[in-house]
Length: 182
Image (tube, rainbow, N blue to C red; front, side, top):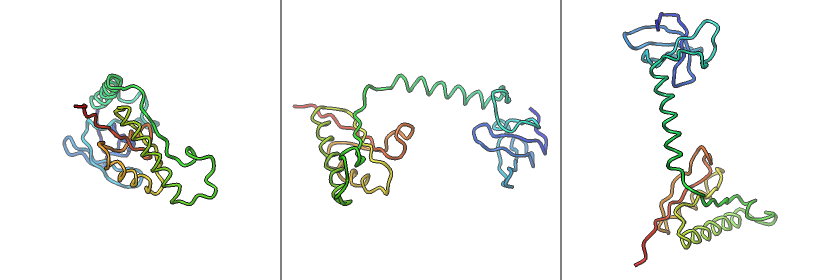
């Protein structure tokens, strides 16, 4: 791969492309369409042809960084399958899932119902020795999520944001500590 000032390039691990403006050993300065200048190592860039607007399977396939990225993805997929667990206990706390109609309910009574439902489901999961529960609360203004945080602190659990890929930002995963009975 030969880099020359004025040549069009794309970044391997980003959606950025631009024109080479300076070469400093292994470091290349590129300028994007908005005029911003970025620095990358040569092995992080791919040369684009005159008529090529985006990366494709026909891009510089021999780029070592690109090969590493492809092999990392295949490794991650296989690891995920090995650690995949069985059925996850999900509790949807959206108000329309809990009642047929919110007519006559104010925000406080809706929130109270959602928190009480979460409390009942969490106690059920603890009693039945489930290891994980996912509470789907939605994004909103974060009131329900913070109330759930206060609730979970009263129980022998650890909680954190659930998988972004599966639930987005609107879910909390609760890990229940299993204490052996003595």
